[in-house]
Length: 319
Image (tube, rainbow, N blue to C red; front, side, top):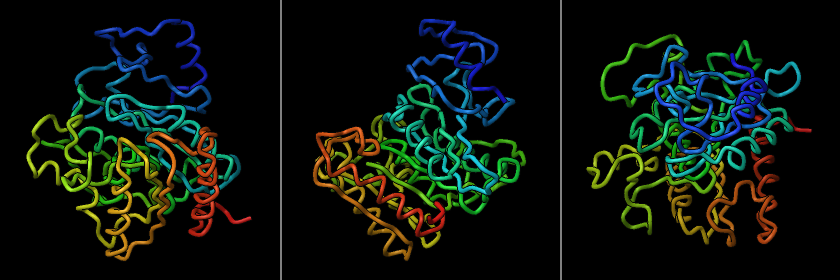
């Protein structure tokens, strides 16, 4: 386990953002070609595949999926959430869609794990999905050691990270989208199914009838076949076993139409899956938790709504 404090001291000593090619391990190159900066206050860092990630094309920071860990205080066992930052699958918004939410979860007695997943164009489908499944499995596999409830492990995603969360919420527990064979270890045999999902301005459908939602070239490339578009469209894979979901969107989101949220909610309802939906009138894309957008004061209630929903289901302890 690499201590986050030591990791950040190394970054500060480096002083500039560089990409160092041909390094022997990601620990020697703690910076990212896409500019991902690690959180400043994580307790530790866990590499998802210590011996090297499947499909990796290098050994730099961007080639190594990892979790920045924020364990909740107290003996537990705690609920846990894997936080999936957004960024269009080509960069990661680590602070406003990762670390800030991890701190909020900690304040409510929930352990949090912010995922650095692999990005395009270096990594196309299915590698972000492989990393997301591994992250849920990794946390669940360490439930006893980390004082977690193995039946209360959720995901929270934003924008593209919300798409990844929707993918995980609707995937088979032991699914593996890898194209080709890969040796399984003990963690790969653990269920990757989230017990709940929080979806913030998430891309949840690829439908020509919804403005701006057809195709995801960032991970499929141009002119992807319909079968591939269908494979990564969460709404098409909703079943009665999909994760209970809390869905948040804004009507004036210029990048992810709010019909993504309503379509996914409708699909969950038809399948008999518990869900809560909030579509606010005001607010552009990327409103985070709503509390850093004073020009849209109605959004500030979002954390309260989420807290209440998590209390209803027992993922946050009722006061």
